[in-house]
Amino acid sequence: MIAAQTLAVSGFPLYGADTGGYRGGGPTKESLLRWAEHTALSMVMQLGPGEDKYPWSYDAETVTTYTALANLHQSIAPYLYSLLLDAEASGTPTIRPLPLAYPDDGESVAFADTEYLLGPALLVAPVVTQGATSRAVHVPPGTWVSWWDGTKVVGPKTWTAKAPIGDPPLFVLGGSLLPTLPGGIDTLVSASAAGTVSLDAKAGLDTALAWVHGPANAGWPDGSSLSITDGAGATEAVTLTWKPHGTGRTLTITLDTSERLGKGGDPTTVHALSGAPVVKAATDAAALGAKGSAYHLTGAKAVLRLDGASEVAIQ
Image 1 (tube, rainbow, N blue to C red):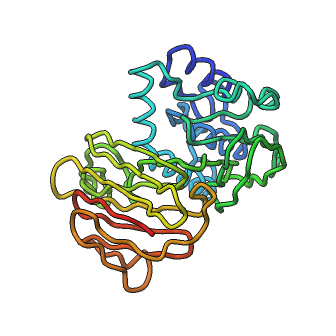
Image 2: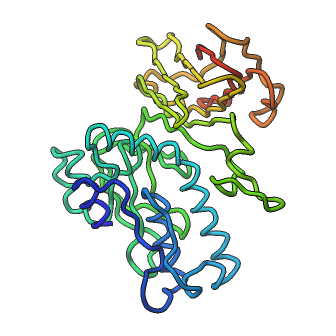
């Protein structure tokens, strides 16, 4: 973690540790999975060489946990790509030490070696103590939302967070918009093996996650873009503008609107300002269907499927 932070701020945006180590015998099961928690939430996730370091050389539980972490890493690939573009254009570090990102937060210095920011949106605090199932976590100023259960923490604050193996403390800064990949993809490269789902097989199916708290923008490697505008008043709309690159592209986005600059109030309606009409899903988010623009609302959460270029308002 120290190397990743040091190299990122020194102009090396793509450092990645060899999960499990490069030389010598394999680590314990616990050490391998804690190591994977860090690399899953870094720019490069890879295994060190040697059968004694591979998850399938341990047991089924190790494979299941490692697979979930690998899927997490893969799902945020478009976000990681955007960090690389920023690093190339302006030298912005992909992985950021807390004191660099929040220089006025003096308490963050004590946590700089074992916590870091993955881009501006994700705060990562892997477990580095053998046998621990919790750890002290410090969040800098702002509202931070737990990736796992949606719990909100307003910083600066230090407290003890639960950290079972496979679910390291991971928080998203309120207001963030993350471009992601759809689930169920086995590989990002072309594949011909039976039952293997490649990225190409889900071409045109874009996804994103948003925690609405003011304006936000996101881009995809193919040039597609999404912007969010949060209305100034409590009764004003949240507006989404989806501009896909080419035709036949859809976006499924999950939005947490509970922050909304503190205005409160759960969304009750979604309507199209441009593009195809947006219809309400009959039952739940799973019923959005494969075609057509649709939405589902549950409390402060909205799930939308936008078929083609669209601008929609959520009120």
